[in-house]
Image (cartoon, rainbow over all chains, first blue to last red; front, side, top):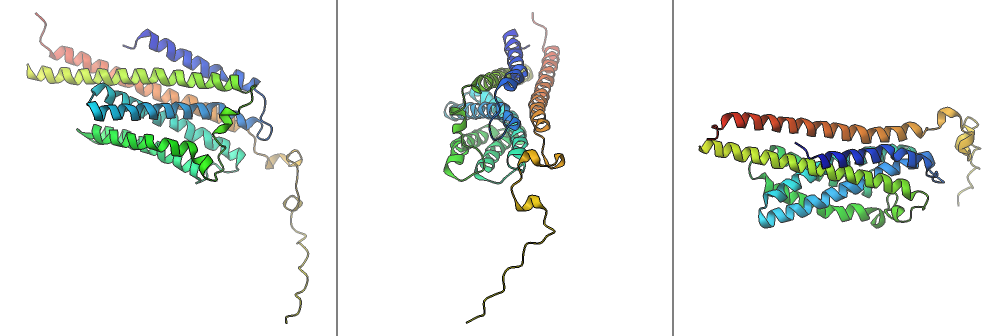
Length: 220
Length: 80
């Protein structure tokens, strides 16, 4: 049912993430945080995948509202599910780092709270699609656009307000010796994200064709 | 004019030394240190568990769609 190229790319992504600890172990220790800083190599790529999913979901939702294209709606729904998946990874790995770095799992500061709200918007999107009934697609598309509008606030919150969270510039200013592990892991996450998005969109297209076939069978 | 207040009492001798002065982390007793390795391993486990659960649910939904397709093929009249 799934094309072989999907499966191959998916396994390649898994192999990249599975082998990432070898590069992460070889990367130097950060001077103040030590070993716990290495959570960064999973935490940040999961957020990169989540923000990519949000952008795809938001743009597909705008396209759906403008053209009523069913393929755009299917893409938006698939991406919204992956926002929740990769956001959950970010939401769980961050506090594990925070426990050691800050002494607490969670702080209600601007960065963490805005990220949680952004993630909850896409949980709401998925609940709306699951239980909203016919016509919920348009309302959900509006929710997705609202969720996408949150992204700049989440990204810049560490710069705009005083937060305990490190600034986003930490990625750009990463030491050269830490970059191979980071880019390896980030590429692996994005590869897994891309193949899961393709598979999920394929599932939604399959469901739509089954629904259409049932309707046409009833007309016979 | 008020009389000068008496000097502040000296700090309680029951206070633990670690609360009064800086103690390097290397000199802390082992039970007061938070090990990083279990947290790091837990974070890596979270990545795999979340992805594995999602892939499993996706796989189940594909199988269900395949069953629906077979049922639908059974309902349709045979092609002439």
